[in-house]
Amino acid sequence: MPKLVVTHAVVDIERWLKGKAERAASIGPFATNVTDHVAADGSNNVAITADVHDMEGAQAMMASPSPEAAAQMESHGVLPPMTAYIEK
Picture 1 (cartoon, rainbow, N blue to C red):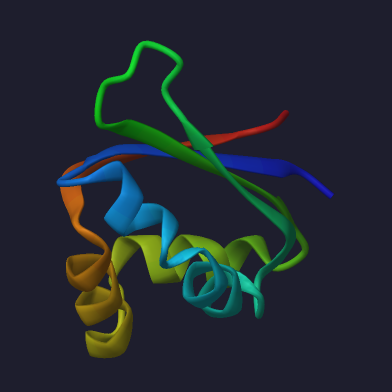
Picture 2 (picture 1 turned 30 degrees about the vertical axis):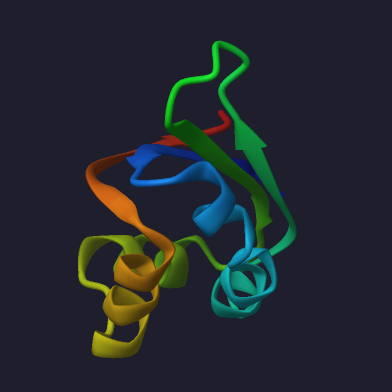
């Protein structure tokens, strides 16, 4: 399974971390081992890594999030842009 890494900034790190279970559940249909990372420099930059078993589904969700996913990202304080990296 390829690993997916998504990076972006957030409004508040603690607010974003509180959404960990919701984030893992929304990514769950496409990936496993969803892990949150925060920047070591103390900034508001974060990353999510996951092992992807449905790359098409994951890419579709990133390209055009459902209204529910978009609302969840907003409630977690996600700031665009999001950058995705795929393990090759």
